[in-house]
Image 1 (cartoon, rainbow, N blue to C red):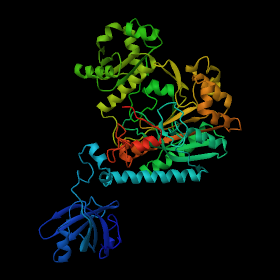
Image 2: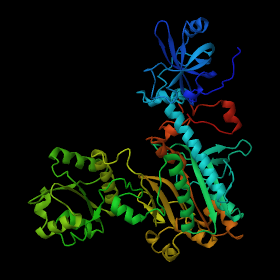
Image 3: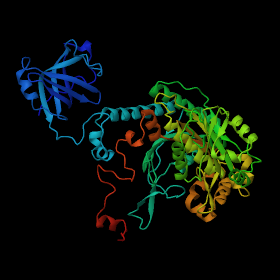
Image 4: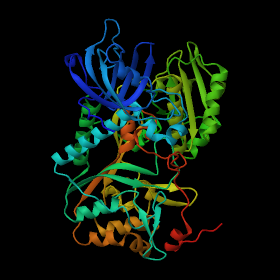
Length: 589
């Protein structure tokens, strides 16, 4: 069928185009037949334009317009005119004009769609994912992908301007299972052997530093076979960065420059640099999280000194066992009912906590069932320490340090949700969290694991404790946190083969195992590895926050469900016996 190429997009026409003969190509968005006159909104990714079929203007076109329905693909030729007085649509950028149709070509008819192609529809996400190609027609989804594209361009332009080289690293690599599970790819040519999909280009980018590349970046796909949630996918995108001959401050400077660009060019917001910093210990004690949300207060306070001599058994046991007492003030909630307080207690218990101590602050003093266990001096010191005022509510948790702080942090977030303390127009809060522990202890396996990865450098002053007291060692690691979400993480790397061997030994990795898994990297270090460090941005999560969405699935064109399924093309899917045979694989029933 013959049709003319478009001369304008559906979001382009304004009053200055009145009188112009135009061709629009797009989809029928809405249709209104008022008897004599037919109004149709034609949509493409640039916007919407109303076109009008009038029998007195062109009877043939009007007749053809009668068959058009939602999501039909059409080519429209007509004349731009000013809309009649009082019929302007201020919600459309093209709302001051419409197009009188001279000719219409039906390029493709369409079945009735399973949901309306419009924003803010009430439809189950599974249906949206099954018909993702229709979901992506919605303006909100297209704007998210356009914004993501802009962020790619900003990143590439920024790093190019700072002498970085974009280098592609392999997608098929050696399996080095430390952390999340690898996705494995069987080799047809090498029977019984497997490639892995990279969880990160970590080892390759360090090798690029050994190779003298000096400044590397890559917008790269990564893969992790792990349980999913709203901000995770089995395949995800990183902005990967590595630099030679740098320390932490230079990496911070580069990252803050990029974030300044993102804030300005995507959000039209200014940020002040250098960004604030919290140590891991400060973040945990004040906010109960290593990715604290600073858009609201409710700051936690450690109360061990207040109750250092307490005879209250719950507090006494925590202090004697090296635990912690942590609490925070909820202003103006001193009138909470017993039912409301019981609901908060249940919230803590469902998270694994032993309970919650709540205290109402009254004009005449503190009110709670636990007050009979606290001396007047302790009550006065508690009020002073928390700067509590009449009408406030105090919430206190106690127990082992890390678990208690984490529970208090989750309760802090829950109170922010209940009190609606995080507004949509809240100023975004960006900060660094630094000085992480190098190791974290796992109770199930009774061993230490690398908190970040086994190539993270310890603080040099802590190297002497790596064998004798691993829990004491801090890492030269850092996370960038935006609005309570970790958006980037990195570290100064180990570049010395002896220190790397010590790191593996501290993790319980034998020399043989280290050589098998990481030998190529350790060997490279013996040929003159420069000091280096880097960072990786979780790009999907970053785009999600900038788009104002709650799930990274809404900023990924073709995402998987929470169970790792693609409902649209039904993968993962079975494969034929012939394919399995070629790969030397046999499935067990």
